[in-house]
Length: 324
Image (tube, rainbow, N blue to C red; front, side, top):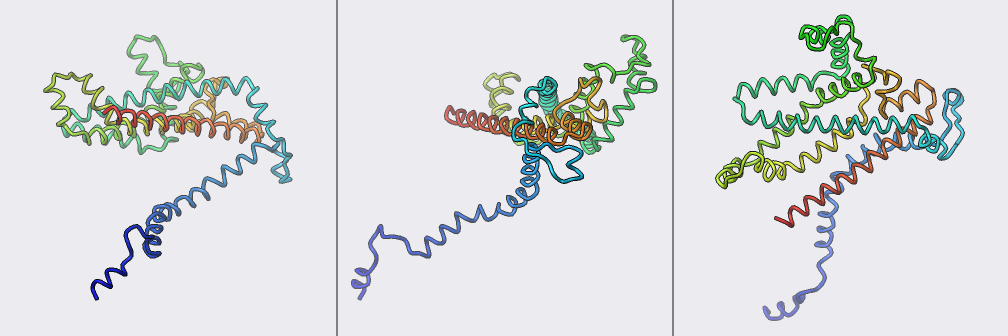
């Protein structure tokens, strides 16, 4: 009987049973089923507004359309007019400069603060961390108003302090926001000051995950501070640095509150970036179609940059892994 049963067994290499195939299929579909609710929520929350924005950018939507509900379809005319507009090119260049300066300052200062937190005493670390969290928790509008009061021409504490130093002369009645470069500089400082806690604390947390044995081994081999920073800290923190850089670029390009509250894009539009330019075009000039066009172009620029940056970062990680 045993030999007959063995003879009836299926030989090796036959097709798996339907039940086994069904179990494998369920295992493959399980990750997609788990992310499906989040994907549906994103499509509903962000997909429809983006689609509506894209449709609006192809229409001549003005004040009359608000009452009639009808807007003429103009195709790509809004985009053609936008790219031929000298003001848009100036705003785009200013946005690039603003973003590069903000992100560079955020990453450098954030890294220095994170490195400082690893070397100070426990009480100093607690005080610094609490101070950073308080800055981060302050609402942007409130923080911007505080900065506006600090640099108020007649009663601002910054002007008073700089005057007391007796190095820059009498700045009691100096209006920082009437000079384009000073106004843009203050906006950059505010943006960096407000975003620095997130970068510093994130890098500090990531730095704490690096084993101290790596640094001890490097010091035993005679490596200095710059060498350990280059060959240990930067390679290990590269994924975190990539994500932080990408997030800060997106947030800097879309920065609106500090610019609008401090300068409203002035003087003479010299502090206007893409976010402010879209708002002014849509709600001050009542040209909603052109405002939507600026928003669409901003989204496309950020999307192209994000994809290219992520692919480049991933390629560097693969090349580094192959080299190792």
